[in-house]
Image: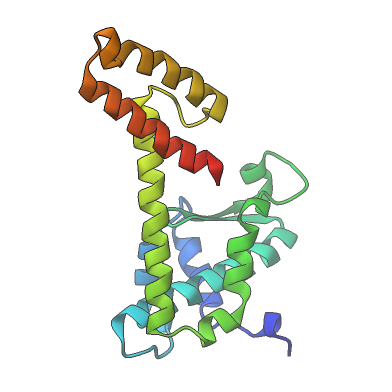
Length: 195
């Protein structure tokens, strides 16, 4: 049996739970529903939480692929996991709308990620998540400071910065605090777009 054929003991309980919740459930609710089906996990609470999450996501991504072949679409997000006929979910398109999260799927379908996870690995994953989370918040705040929406490109940032910096520059009678706020937002976005 190949690695991708290794069965996940949560697939059946997850399908049962999804049938009970046709409007969908969050990952947290799903974990509550299938708690009794979970196999023994690590004693360390942080590592055990990672293992629960990994097992659920592994089962969900396996189900997503196999259920598509049977005419169903499985939406997988932390706040909404929902099973519905593919024609309703995708508007009748002939391919699953699941390509966007291919990297996540690949990660969760790789049993080595589960087998080799230890407390240090999980701590590093959490630190990386929080770093990206705070970076996303900082970019959103910078865009808001410059009165731009999330779809703004670098050229729009530059144009808006020039307008606001000119209006708030102390040499032109502007507010120094506002100028520094605009400049800080510009620097945050410059770093973001340089990636």
